Amino acid sequence: PLTEHDHPRPRQCQMDINNKQHRTRTGLLRWLHERGISLFFLLMIRRPQRSTLSSSSAASDVYKRQGTSAGAESQGYHVGDEVLGVTRFGGYTTTIHCDTRYMSHLPEGYNLEQGASLPAQALTAWYGLVELGRMRDSCAGLPRGSKTALIHSGAGGTGLWAIKLCQYFGVNVITTVGSASKKELLQTAVGLSEQCVLDRSELKNATHRRVALKSALNYLGKVSYDFVFDSLLGEWFDCSYEFLGVQGKHLVLGAGSMTPHSDSANWLTLGYKYLRRPMLDPLAMISQNKSLIAFNLIWLYESTSEIRLYLARLLEVLPHMDPPGTETCGSGEGYGKVGKVWPRFTDLPEALRDFQAGSTVGKVLVSTK
Image 1 (cartoon, helix red, strand yellow):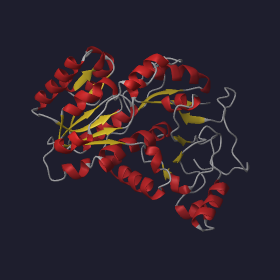
Image 2 (spheres, one colour):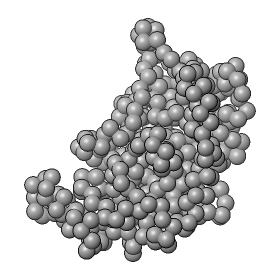
Image 3 (cartoon, helix red, strand yellow):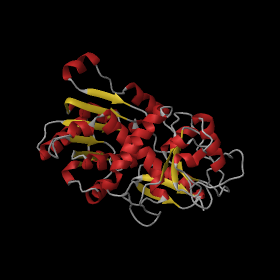
Image 4 (spheres, one colour):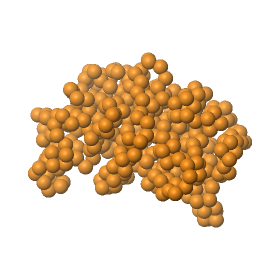
């Protein structure tokens, strides 16, 4: 929440285990950032008693950028409000100077953990499927179940939001997961049938993958996918694109197949995967009349009006979807958008290893107390 603060500038947190004033989302983005591979923006939310956003600095920021002296209160924010905010870089800090245009009140019914998991994952799914993929427009006026989507890595934080959005708009869902336990969990938690959840660990070659995707379509009485939400690339790309129908949209948001699952990367393997990365012929795509759309949400950061518009649209439909569940570490399998909340900052290395191993479900959060 917003609180008054005397510090003129924020202090950076350098992963110091003695720092007790830090709550943040952790995951693959942090791992990549530390190694200089790629930088994305991190989204953060603050705890009531300790983590603070300076009301005075927010007001001065509004004054400088928007030409008003009314400050944050003129934007509808007051000291004590529970908010979520975004920053491109420098999010690992005890205090952040945030333009109010990058802030939003915590949705009703959401706790801080759920709110911290919402912006990056939910907005990624919304921007890809709804704004770029035009899912809402293409489903307008059609009976539910007319369209079909293939969601890769459906048990992840973004994948779960993508499934929920598809279900909200009446789109059939077929999804892939990385293990049998995640398959069983999605069947229970999201209500997908066994035939619509594909375990990638059982499908070792291109023929098996093609047969599985085709069988899932046959089960639904469909011949092709209208949307592919792809965070994998790699060996699943060709068969996914093959079954994409006319006017279909293949939306690429990541390359999980190239992500190392340990503390050290095998550069020979990465190099091999890079050389074998998928290739498409634009000339052939014209005759096929289907689209490949690759996106990275970070490029919206300078377009504050777009971010606010898309977030407002998302928050408008949010009450009509199931609220995300939470799980504290050690209490059993989690299946909501928040998969695990590690209760101590000293758990961060273990949380990263757990995430890298691909054993988590939903979004991983690390909290300090």
